[in-house]
Length: 263
Image 1 (cartoon, one colour):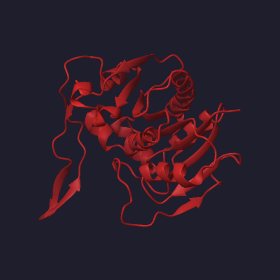
Image 2: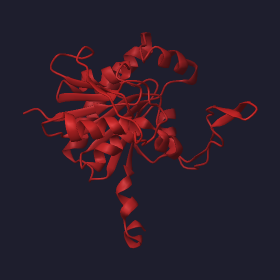
Image 3: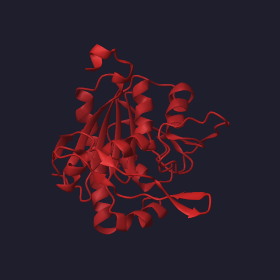
Image 4: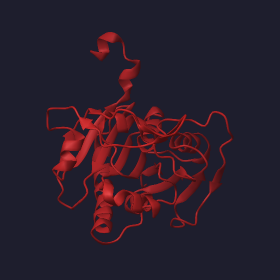
């Protein structure tokens, strides 16, 4: 029997980056998709506490053998509702991505809806992997506006990232992380069949305020690259700069650890 993967993201069910991952993973896995109906970037681990969440079965975007639901909520909502109500067969792994843009550094990881989708899967006791792909800042707005549709070299790189995601998923499931841990994968700009994989830690970064004043009493979101404050070269951001695939283990199981165990 083929293993079963639940896939979500934060860029929405329309994202070509999500579809790339679904297509690649479905070669070896039975796939179910529960993804936001609209973009939910930078939402972190938010849960829709004060509204009803509408779920619509949506089969038109994927092959007929793939169950898919568009969820009018956050990535955490998607995974929670799918595991609790929509899926009636065991899930072997929860995957999230491929995110449009990297999810590196402590600050971005904790802000990411894509990583949060994987965290929710890990909290249910499933192996969980988040996938993201570096997009240069000069391309980001156009690619995001096109729901991840690309062409030329970058399209080839994205397809390769999907293939490497399948390879990494199969490899990680041979020795899955313990409950409460999430594997965070970031693909470089030019992802190749032979791009090396580096074990990394999230870089530390100083970003300052996420906002700029737009008018009296009003502030709008304004992202800056910030300043990396690490001095070593085994961070996720450093690996991407070398053209490597970054693989970090995010250990959320320590949140409830005793003081002695957390040392």
